[in-house]
Image 1 (cartoon, rainbow, N blue to C red):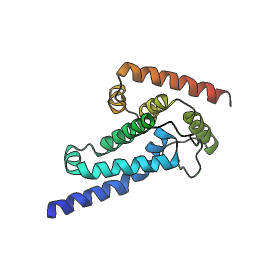
Image 2 (tube, one colour):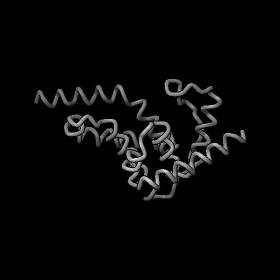
Image 3 (spheres, rainbow, N blue to C red):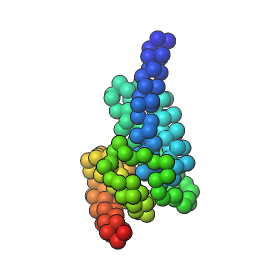
Length: 164
């Protein structure tokens, strides 16, 4: 019983310290505030179930990130894509970027215009700084496909942002 209380306390501490960041990741992956909330809730529930194993390995954040990405992929396969809501209303990136508010808004709006897999590859590689291999593992695709999605996504972002 004492071990379980200690595990619960460690879980609560992890969630309290990383929840806002993980919510931003979920939003960047899916582009919808409500869906991001659902993705994060699903991911944190699954993390709680696997907490003792995942915490012991020190892979808490990677595990949650992987669940967010895979759940989003599963959701998009199950049903038609809902319209996305671009923009940054209520989204504070000040701690992660040194861009002006207008630049951040333009970047996120352009990011939401990318096809889902390109957006996910760009977010994982260039916002979260994962390697090609890590991104491939989280998306369940080959490293070559990650490179292709990332390259195409960055080209589209550059084209959209240079026209503004």
